[in-house]
Amino acid sequence: MSGVRVLVGTRKGAFTLTSDGGRSDWKVSGPHFGGWEIYHVNGSPADPDRLYASQCSGWFGQVIQRSDDGGKTWEPAGNEFGYEGEVGDHLWYDGKPRPWEFKRIWHFEPSPDDPDTVYAGAEDAAIFRSTDGAKTWQELPGLRTHESGPRWQPGAGGMCLHTIILDPVNKDRMFVAISAAGAFRTDDAGKSWQPINQGLRSEGIPDPNADVGHCVHRIAMHPSRPEVLFMQKHWDVMRTDNAGESWREISGNLPTDFGFPIAVHAHEPETIYVVPIKSDSEHYVPEGKLRVYRSRTGGDEWEPLTTGLPQADCYHNVLRDAMAVDTLDPCGIYFGTSGGQVYGSADGGDTWAPIVRDLPAVLSVEVQVLP
Amino acid sequence: MIRIVLPAHLKNLARVSGEVRLEVTGSVTQRVVLDVLEAQYPMLRGTIRDRQSGNRRAFVRFFACEEDLSNESPDAPLPDRVVKGEEPLLIVGAMAGG
Image 1 (cartoon, helix red, strand yellow):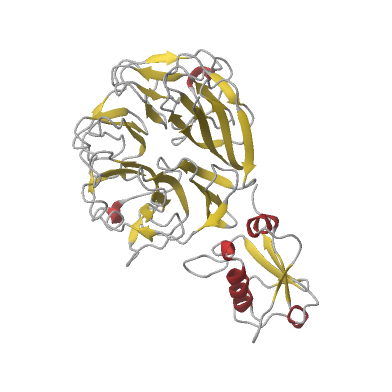
Image 2 (tube, rainbow over the protein chains, first blue to last red):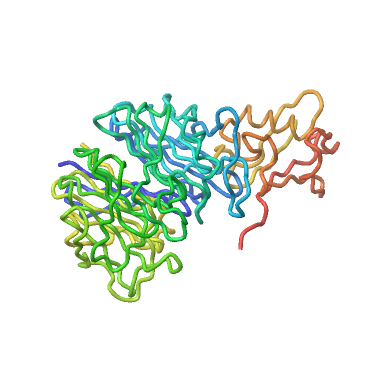
């Protein structure tokens, strides 16, 4: 029977949660790198035992860890992330130019084909690639040096590149998202990039057609339909059916369309999940109820999923990289909260149960299906 | 023999316990000692000094012989007692937080 391994990054270390395919009995391992912030842990689709972890601290900076045995043991890998060429300026909060400065890695996206190839999304926003299993990193500078770069500004969490999606069909195509610059696409394997933000409406931006300046929180894709992307923006849930050329709002009957994560069911490309959050000034779920919302129609019509989730006195947040789906049948859904719970559903979201309740605040959740 | 005391997180990262002892030849300065430390423990690169600028990270401090050497020139000689191995160079995570 196949199994699953959930990779959890928290404010104070990494954890792995493992179960068989029934997904009801779990073993919790960790903390790994206790006391360090683990922004993301992700595994290679080509070799599930190859994991990459972003370990960082306000004191000691960025460390990259690599495991070749599914997280049992780890070795420090390369942590030199140098911007290529002229560093240049972006806009700071005060509207003045400020040089790009590397702070941390927010997200890893391993290649589907090669365990040694992995992309990394950085703050200050840039995309890096390693082809030697994270020993060395090279920037794909065409993104940071896009002509709009000097107009990019950080969001409240920093100017982070937090989403990387590799097109499974067109290998030269990638999508990234940056807070608070917006979404970008390359069609030539990262040499050049274009903003794909038409149709996004961000209150407070005077020009509704602004090509950059949008606070995109997360983008998700189903691998069978790479032209279709779903987006949780700061406010608004959006979709595109033409690889980002234009977006339309699909918030529909959501109680609030502010939130962070968005995910697509593994076997139903029109079934999507979000976790509505009350507002950007109150980063917790509305009415003290932790509800995942599911749309089976690709947006617009949403239903709350509540069975097994706390429906009173809950005031957690779910961050942008803290929701994942497995590829078992039925599809499993997982998410982690700012209160340290990781919830799982083994039936596509119909029912939920906590896998673990009292971890440090969860920053990221990924899941692997094991042979 | 230069003696170094690392903060707990960096001991874990470098997989050492107790003091680190380094053979340093020539002039003994912060820069030289940290270069030797990082050569011997490459996983510490970037954790004490910024990878790009080479500057001390903001919340890392250097102490020796009851003196705060954090803002001394990285090319200034370290105190004699550190050079002779009588006192360790303390690399400390600053008490910062909230």
